[in-house]
Structure formats: C-alpha cells, structure tokens
Length: 340
Image 1 (cartoon, helix red, strand yellow):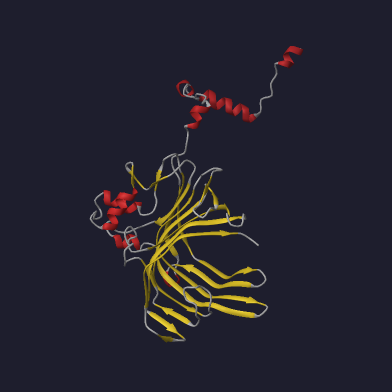
Image 2 (image 1 turned 30 degrees about the vertical axis):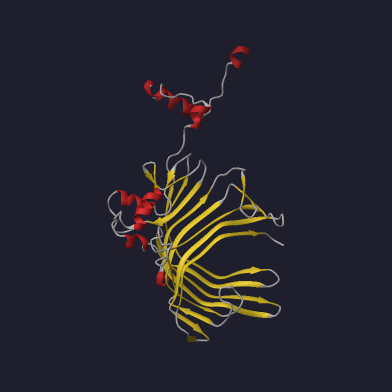
C-alpha cells in the first residue's frame, strides 16, 4: 500500500492536455525537437525591426520653465501645412547586429541610383551612392546593440523624381508667443512665429558603447554610449516678430520683423550631399566637464549648415531691404549642461 502511494502522481487538466498534444504529434515531427546549448542559442536572433506609419497633430497651450521667474512658450502647434494633419511619415526602428547595415540619411537615394532610377551624374546623387553603398547594401553600418530609428516617408511618389522625394513630408510650426516673467513684470521675446517647410531624412541613433568613455578636444570626458541626431529639413516660408533685445547675439536689437524666411542649402561651397536642404547633427551623452569637474549632459560634435534668406526685413515695422546668409555654419560646438 505504501509503495502504491509513492508511485501516485497528481495529473492536472493542463498537464494532461500537454501530454495529449505531444503524443498526437507524428513521430517524425517529434524527432525534430533538439535541446539548444548556449552556443546555439547565441545564434538565434530576430531579423526584422518595427515600422510605424505615423500621422499626428500636436498642440500645447503653454509650455513653461519655472525658476525664480518663468519662460513660457504659448500656443505651440505642429501640423501639416495650413493646419492640416502631419502625415505620410514612416518610422523604422531596429536593434543592430554586429556590422549590420541599416537605412540612414539619403540611403534611399543611393538605392534608387543603383537601380538606375536616378541620374548618377547628379553630384548629390553620386555623393549619396558613394556614401551609403556598404557591402552590397544601402545605409550605414552599425555595431551590435545600437538602437537605430530612421524617419522617412510612407510614400515618396515617383521613384525617379528627386523633388517628390524631398517634398514628401511637409510640416508647419506655429508659436503665438515666447514670453518671460519675473518680479519686474513680463516681456515678449518672440511673437507670431510661423514656419512652413519639408522634413528630410532624420535619424536618431543610440550607440551602444557600454561603459566606455572618450575625451573630447576640450578635455571633457563623455560616455561612449550616446544619442546621435542627424536631420535634413527646409523652411520654404516663415515669419516672426523679434520683440526683445539681447536674446541671441546674432541680432542684438529689438523690434525686428521677418517675412518670407527661407532656410535651405542651395548656394555656396558646402551644398554637396545635402540636396538643397539645411542640415543639423549633434551627439548627446553623460559627460564630465574638464573645467569645473561637474557631471551633466554633454552636447557635442554639433554642426548646422544652411543658407538663410530674409527677403523682407523690418525694423520698427518698416522694411529696410533683404538679408541673406550664405554658407552659414555652426561647427566645433560643445556644451555641458548641469544644474546650479
């Protein structure tokens, strides 16, 4: 009796179901099941990322930064042009394998040129073909564990048209006013800001550098794991009122009005590879200042390149003519941001 009780097992309905399922499999199928050791498991990886087709419209009544006083961004809106839905956007997200080539920048242009859909004698197209052709693929090569996000268009239109590619995603950014307030009262810095244009290829990459660090030219130590931003864009029409002085050293005066603003990269000596669009790049990571020893957010390897046209430049409500910048470039810029 004791031996009989020792051999008894409790069989739950779920356990019984699993045994029935296993026994119902044909023997050849059961023969294919094999345990995987650690080495074999290391070779089992996912081969596909995630694609998100996106349309949206964003509005914020007021965004405030409050310290002793406050800085307020009032009536912010991001949409498609003429207050329509911001759409036709496609975001691809991948975690790279070691040496994997993923879409980046103007790699779609390189793919089309290789397929004979675009003229390879066009200097920008030739540059893209040389820059983004990697080991039989088109894009940029990444390290294992890098998180790669690429924003492009869902539909680029005619694959032989560069114009349709560059104008596939349109946007509009509006801000009613930017104000500051404190014990002395309040002041308006900017008002009636309206920018319309097109968003080009935009990439956000989080590099997997582990716990490694590197030293910048100014001596700051930054993490090898960093966020990298690369974007191209064009402002086709913009306007704003600059209401307060001493905001940015570029223009150290008030009562400025700008109409017909355009930001692009179609003139000068640094147009190659930009397809007429302005560009901005930056890297962000944890850092330590060599000057103060403080830890904070390091913004480094910042670069901005554009041509800027202001066909209507007003002072005190009266136009004084037009203003143009050619090969406007911000380079070799590093910032360390921390609290005090």
